[in-house]
Amino acid sequence: MMKIINFNVNGSDIELAIDERESLADTLRERLDLTSVKKGCEVGECGACTVLIDGKATDTCLYLSVWADGRSIITTEGLQDESGKLHPVQQAFIEKTAVQCGFCIPGIIMTCVEIVGRGESYTREQLKKEIEGHLCRCTGYQNIINAIERAIEIIEEAK
Image (cartoon, rainbow, N blue to C red; front, side):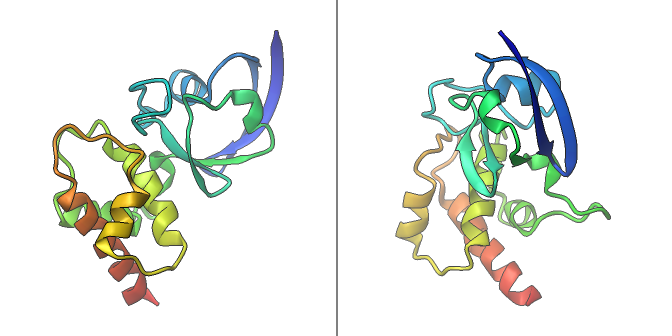
């Protein structure tokens, strides 16, 4: 059964007719061409499909598009400002070489945006817990943790 939904994606209001069974991952990736949304496990275990929904990091493979009606969604493509300046998390990932193959990175970045947006302090062990819903086959996560710490520093320096 088809349903019309209205939602905001990366600052743009969108209206779509969708199948009520369609996942948000499919809608974002296949219909809106937001290829930072990766389809990995499709059971909510790897975090590759993570985006922010109303500011909360969410696995979109388990989230139906109909549930996004009226919500605000941000993907990695929506993090840069109007001038093209990278988000502090993106900049930190570059500075700390926290990227290898890159498949998992967009989802991890979106979770990190939520983490740094809280304005809290974290120990390395707490940061490991915060990102434990993400699987990365390339790294030992050390540079990812370094990047999160650096993003927090960048935000603090900007204040």
